[in-house]
Every structure is written in structure tokens, then in C-alpha cells.
Image 1 (tube, rainbow, N blue to C red):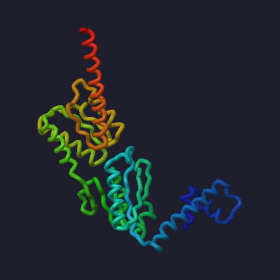
Image 2: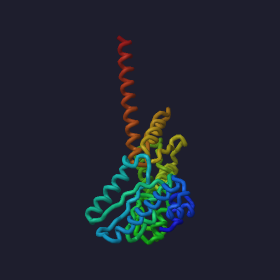
Image 3: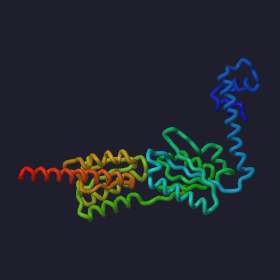
Image 4: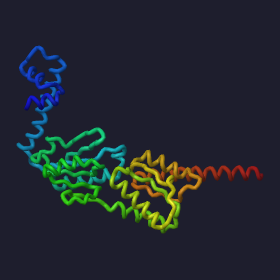
Amino acid sequence: MKISEIARKAGVSSMVVSRVMQGSPTVKRADRERVEKAISRLKLETAFIAAPRKRKTRRIFGLIVPRFEDIFHSFYATEVIKGVSLAASRLKLDIVFHVSDRQKHEDWLTSASLDPDYIDGVLFADINGDMPQLKKVIAKNIPHILMNNYIEDKTINCIAVDNFKAAVNVAEYLINRGHVKIATIAGDLSTQAGKLRLDGFTTCMKKHNLNLPLKYVKVGHFLRSPARREAEKLIGFADRPTAIFAASDVMAMEAIDVITVSYTHLRAHETVLDLVCRLLLE
């Protein structure tokens, strides 16, 4: 271990580390404890890298899923995790599962986890614009697959659906059903899927010369609560839409629930009005 590395981990100067290692009584107790903890952590990281080299008997792959509010309510995320786990079991692989958070700058891809002697490949369930993590894997020449994104760079292995065309198909379906007042609850527009699905929807509406008021375009960020709020706004309009294109299954289920509850209340209200009218007539 280098003194400079210990100092960086402990947040102290190299001089303080040197004095601790020499047993100097002039070092503050708090600084001494920080240095000792840093040494312990570095020993653990060293063991983490070294152990697989000595007794690695199975291949190890990392599965990285971006953190978002409804991750474990997401059909996409759970299906990816389930699919990867089933394949790993069948192929006798070990999977290291990590939820990344680019906003908090959490980084699973440390020097330890990216050591080619430890990790055999990395699967990205998505990157949500976090290219630096992907570039680290590429720089180390570690096999990788990026899911749910299409990148034209031929050095990057990726798997994705045609989000633009899929959104056009959904809009065409609704239009062919006779709808002209169609609203949308878009996904997270910082993601490739969210942007392309909204682009596909708006392009199809323009192609058919259908009016798309700004108030009919809502953003639910692929999350349950925001999608529910936006669905409530849409059906609350006096000139409410006759159809809603939700950009994900989770948001669609929230919209369906809001519409169902609204319809039930409306029918109950009509029943009460009908009863009142009949009582007045009697």
C-alpha cells in the first residue's frame, strides 16, 4: 500500500499517515482512527481483487441497473433481472447485481470490480445517459452489452427496440380506432427511450394533421406517482382526450386505474342524480 493512497482514503496528509505508521504520539486521535480505518479498507479491497485470482472457479458477470424511484415495480427491470438470473443459472455463472445512482456519483466500477481477472463481462440494463461507466468498461476491454439503448458506435455492443417506430405504431392504432383527441404521458425525456417514444407519437399526430394541444402532452418520467398525477389532470379537462398513449406499462396501469376510478364515480353520481329525479317526480 502506498502512503499517498492511504492518505487519500483517510482524508489526511501523507505526513500524518507516516507519523501514524511510526507510532508518533503527536498525531491527533481522530486522525489516527481515520488512517487505521483507511488501511483496513484498503486491505479489504486488496483481498477482494486477489482472492478471485487464487481460487476463481466460475465466471462472474456484473449486472448494472440505473436507480429510479419505482425500480422494483418496473416490469422492464424485473424481467431483465429475472432473465439474466435464469441464464446465469443455466450457464453456471455468478452475477454481481448493482443499482447505480449517477446523481449521487455512486460508482460500482472501481479498480477492483473492473479487474479483468475478476470480472468476465458487464451487462448494462440501461445507462440513462451515464456514458462514463460504459467507457470505463470499454477502456478495460471487458466484454459488455448495453440494453435498452441504440448507439451507432460499432465498438459498443447494444440491444434495443425501435422506440420511435413502436410509438408511431401505437399512435396509428389509436387513430385507426377513430380517436382524434389523443394525449400522451411521456417517459423520462433525458433517456433515449423516453425521447424517441415522444418523437414517434408527435410525428404520427402531425402526419395525420391531428391537433395536439400542449396540455395533452404530459411527462410521467416512467414513474407511478407522477404518471398518476398527470392522468388525473388529463381526465379532469372539460375537453378531455378520448385516448391516452402512456410510454410505459407502469404509467399505463396508473392511467387505467385513474380512468376506472373516475368512471366508477361518474356512474355512481349519475345513479344518485337519477334517483333524485325520480323522487322529485314522485
